[in-house]
Image (cartoon, rainbow, N blue to C red; front, side, top):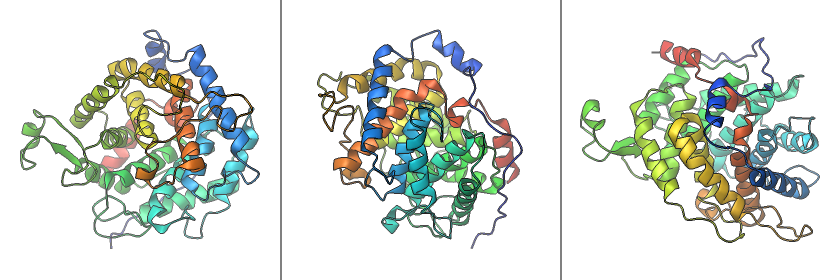
Length: 391
């Protein structure tokens, strides 16, 4: 079994929400309007739907801690921190539901065991963001977050990936699991926590192993760089979806590998897919991609910035605005979106599908606000150096 030191702990520095976006973000705002009056109204309607449907327990009737975390993330991304803002109470309720159900092992999953590391990674990421947005730190949230991060390190497989179930084995399962943990680990760093560098270094290697070029995988790296390619679901090159292309980009960015040549290859795939989207013409709540794919596509575009962000983000934003369900204000569906890919990604559709899709849509519409700690950071050279120190 792979042994590694576990060094997690709170740092002295406290992150606060800045009043101005980073300089890089300001320069981008000169080229196009990231936020429109229509997108602001759409975001407000989406948050209102989430608040109306949350319920007293704070979980939208779901025992999927990942989905409950996504509901909290929607509010957080719009600047509603725990206990603060119009929806501060809703954030508190959702976080309480997650935190109070942490297992002694640190695991954040109370549903199907096959969803251990899906739900755990996503819930840990959200807790990390909440931690970074809270001036007066919640000690219980801190303890749960610390235990959740230790579990991610403890169950990392020997090849650097992760399995669906929370246990360590020789080989990880697929890239969709790695990206969940990548975001959780980066969230920890952005929120003032330390991560063992060897965990990051192993994870970077695992993600690169999921890249496949349009040719013989035995080609040298220099030869692969000349050919089209993308990140795939499995190491053998299977599952070359838009979701996995975006997930791989997000992993590389979260781990500080900004100059990795694979990022550009995958951004070509992502940008082409976004530009091929038809315009939304009916308010049926459909999304430009399934919610899972959209979640990572939006982040990949934002993190890489530049031309991909300027060319593609307005298309996603305007599609969501045009497709949002708008009915009478008394309607239960007014302000939501539906996830046409819910069953594909392990959910059952219905109200959980609405929760997932609406949370992701709100997150995408709120990205330009840059309230989340993970959206405020520029390049993190120290994170990359820590990872490389583990070689």
